[in-house]
Length: 199
Image (cartoon, rainbow, N blue to C red; front, side, top):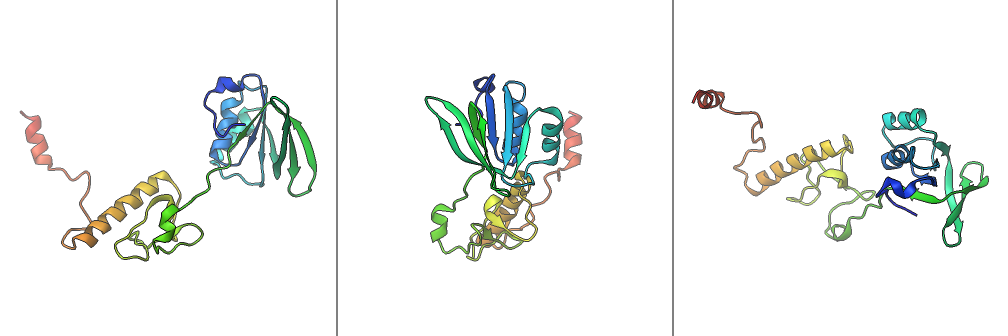
């Protein structure tokens, strides 16, 4: 059993079952397509969370067997993995699939850890914030995956933007004389730049 792929050669010539519907699961299906003997990808729903382009590539560029509404019920084998019992969560049908390896790409269970005890308001394991990234506690800000607001887009790029917003408003909270708009990263004295180039 594997939770991520360290080296492709580990799966050389094997019958591989990949479990999941996100980007990692589909990336593994693409990665292992030309080294594994056969790849089966199962997902418990009929819609993937992965990028549409990656899903299209798996469907068009691989021989992977994609099974929707299927989940793992059990794994069998002696000294090594030999088969998996799958069940369809719509029809309750069961199926035994001969496999040599399984890759679980089921994501992570989010945990707020000690933050859960700090008095910060939490909804569905996320921290609601204002457009300034403020939590319910004055002077405490949240950004990234843990932050929740009506316009939330869960991308790394937007997380970086939220961090910049949170830091600027936190600085202004600590020192009200500071500006929350530090200027543009491209605001450079072009006159000085041209003068330096002439030297």
